[in-house]
Length: 376
Image 1 (cartoon, rainbow, N blue to C red):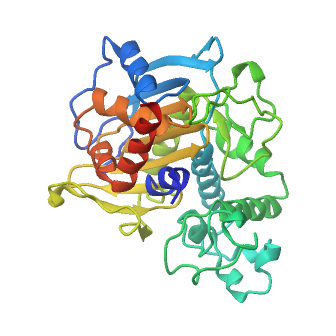
Image 2 (image 1 turned 180 degrees about the vertical axis):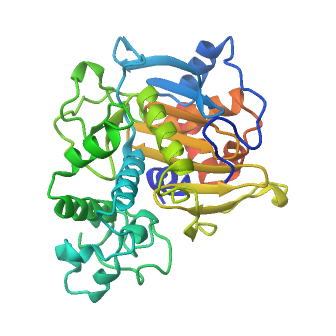
Image 3 (image 1 turned 90 degrees about the vertical axis):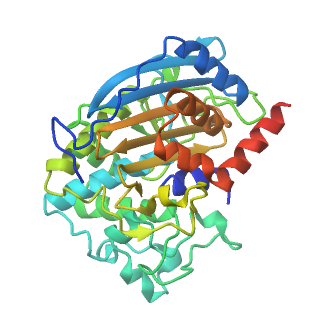
């Protein structure tokens, strides 16, 4: 499994508006945060990083370090490519349309759209928004994962878990046809404007001066590719760390009090086989699964929802404890960013149960070892 799918797919209660069931000790902004970011970007070579700390359902502190591009420092205005975190906004749009009665989460998307690759397989009639959002379609991530570059079911929809970006693009087509509007227009009207945030589904319309210049695993800068990304429901979400934090908090407010309350935090399918817990004390292992749009880890005293994004030159992670209202949004411009942000959060918040669990996973340790070896 590639590190991209690992982070995006495997990284895959008591909430109220003003107070949370189990307040946790505050994680103060370290006085040496600039040095800690520099250390993280050096140990796992990456260009730049942004981090937002969330506590008790609100933004607590932020920090920025490294470069957006050659000679340009990361700032609060930097637009990072957060890759698969785009799927969280697609899920939010879907839930808001369902709450408005425009769609039903359990209706077949074939009423509006059938992908040509699947047209001759009657199982396409079992694809619903809920099955797609929880990654139970039976489809691989993208068509290129098949020997003949043609999508096909690997199991009956609704019977197992398999991460699929292609399925999210089918869902976007369904929503667009049902609402008779372009997907990006729906996202703007139903999610971004109501939550008062700026984001780009692909880099179209974004100022190139704010875009990160991608840095690969080899520590070499690539080129800004603002014209290469079509609007996507599954990938290439360009957004600042601050704006995504605003979106995350808005989505969690809807989770607590909206008409689709519970949909974002309730497990739909287990991912225990995909993400085995390797903690020494197995009694501390969480229940891992996937909700409608998010990965979920349920501990005895914490209920995390989270999503990662990872590609050849970008890495990001957003997570939120629905019991305490605490979490992080972290974005890195660099192919080694997984190591950068895991190292930083481990130092800043060493008792964080979600990060400790992720760090125990053999897949994660293997990826980090490869990154460290490339530096030595």
